[in-house]
Image 1 (cartoon, rainbow, N blue to C red):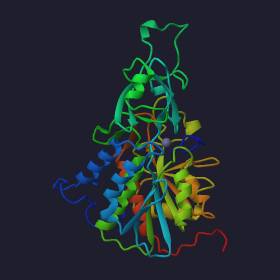
Image 2 (cartoon, rainbow, N blue to C red):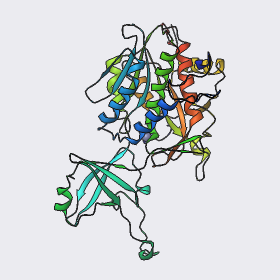
Image 3 (spheres, rainbow, N blue to C red):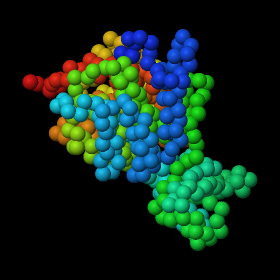
Image 4 (tube, protein in one colour):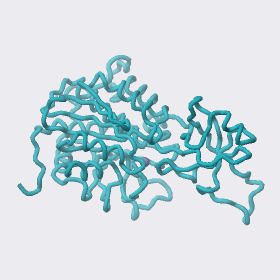
Length: 388
Ligand SMILES: [Zn+2]
């Protein structure tokens, strides 16, 4: 989810819930996300995909979805699209964003410290003491966000991390030493933190926002293929770049595809943890199901279809009200290509834009089920206009 505006952010059951073929455990209850899916998720999340520099992650994603789609294409800035039924006239998009927040090398001091600039809504508060990867033409260069020791801070000199005082140390004493490593102004920087699972039910890591979305829409494609679902429309599985800096990839791809409708998935704030305000941010809980947004960009007739699909398939869901904008790619689809009926199916997430973003595995499964159930309810000739 992009930082500004800040206000928002079953089909599978014919037989047993589908699993990835191959190595999934042969016990009575198969995991919804099998071994192949989980291996991909881990590989995809651990690979950095900074805004504007997403192509490595997009290649991984395309390699994963190719078996589930008829064809695929990419655009100039790297948005990747898998297509089922490419010749169909009626076009349906399911979408997530591929980019992750990061930093830029902004200023290298003569004694070898590096000041940074944001690439997306990176959080200065969490920077001190983090290990980072600086991406250079010579490969990854390691560095750390340093910070004065607790011993030397006092009530008079106890700085709060801010954009103008956080700095990187890559073990160099001079600017020349830094440059000799291949680091220059404009290199992108990501945190080291990788994927892990807490208590077998919580996915945690860097930049689940929103690559968990790319994973979920890929799983929809896999489910449709494995269950041999025939769709009466063209399905465009879109992994957009550059969401974190203003929904830019979605703005581009909506004009290229000009779909008849779009189902967008992104993350939204769980509000159950300490220091969150339900009055400010609403009452959303990890583990309680996908979150359906209400707001001007969300098309009410499409939203009704999503709710009908959830009810029919007995899938849990929560509701959230957004203000002027959803703050997600939903806005770009809704207001692009002369207005595309769009709905937002969000995954509740804790600690957004930190390196320990956390979501419920069950919620992720239910987002996949809800998108799939909604697609199966479509006839491929829907006319969503309020007045006909
Ligand atoms: Zn975000």
